[in-house]
Every structure is written in structure tokens, then in C-alpha cells.
Image 1 (spheres, rainbow, N blue to C red):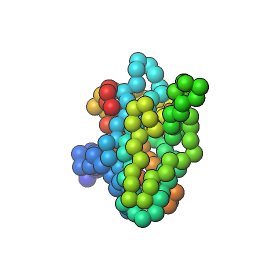
Image 2 (tube, helix red, strand yellow):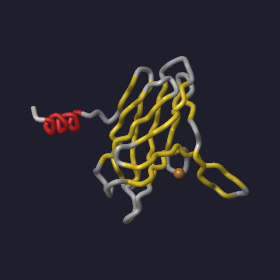
Image 3 (cartoon, rainbow, N blue to C red):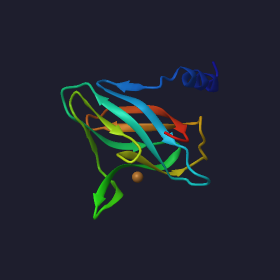
Image 4 (cartoon, helix red, strand yellow):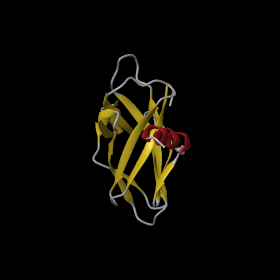
Amino acid sequence: MKPHTLLAAALVFAPLSAWAGSLSVENAAVRAPLGQNTTTAGYLVVKNDSDQEIDLVSAASDGAGRVEIHDHIHENGIMKMVAVDRLSIPAQGEVVLKPHGKHLMIFDLKQPLKDGDTLPVTLTFSDGSTLEIKAPVKTRP
Ligand SMILES: [Cu+2]
């Protein structure tokens, strides 16, 4: 098998959810950026089946210059986004990243993304594990 055939096979069989040890990811999606915008947001649910709290400590993508972990806070009646160092995933619990809530902020996209594309995202956790996902790009995630 040639390398590109292997890659194609890997893509065909890539599951919509990924897991590493006690952590799993569901419902990953990246918002299709508007126009020429190179910044967008990513959403997903991380489940922790272990008896220990684990933190999401960083995210990165081969398709983007930088990925930050963001939360929304209310300040003086205004909702604004802030970058956070980590998001904790409670033991036997989950953290939900969704529109208008916690999210991944994706900067400097290297290629335009449209509905139906996927963006690879690597998540790194406080227990040293990493999860690689292929997040589907959606106009309305
Ligand atoms: Cu943000």
C-alpha cells in the first residue's frame, strides 16, 4: 500500500469519536469560518471515565497556527471570551464545549474550511495522554 492509500484508508475508518485510556471525545465540530476569516471555534464533549479529575491542558492543530482554550465570562453585564490554561473534567464526568460556552479558539487557519471538511485537532491532558480527533467542519455546529 502506498502512503497516500494508507492515509485514505485511515480517513475512511476514522471513528467519529476517539478515546485514549479513560478519556473519550464526542460530538466534535468546527464552525466553518465566514468568508476569508482565518479564526474559528471548535466544540466537543470530553468524557472522563476514571476516578481522577483530569484537565485538558492544551490543544493544537496541524491545520492552524494556534489553538487556545476559551471560556465565556460575564463582566459588567457583558459576555466576553477569555483564554484559560486548563479545563477540568471531573472524575466520572464530562466537560462540554459548545457554542456560547467553553470552546476551542482556532487561529491562523492554513486553508479555507467549508462544510464537510475535517480539521485534525490534538488534545493534551494533565495525565500526559493525548487524543487526536478529526473534527468535522459545520456551518452550524
Ligand atoms: Cu474564543
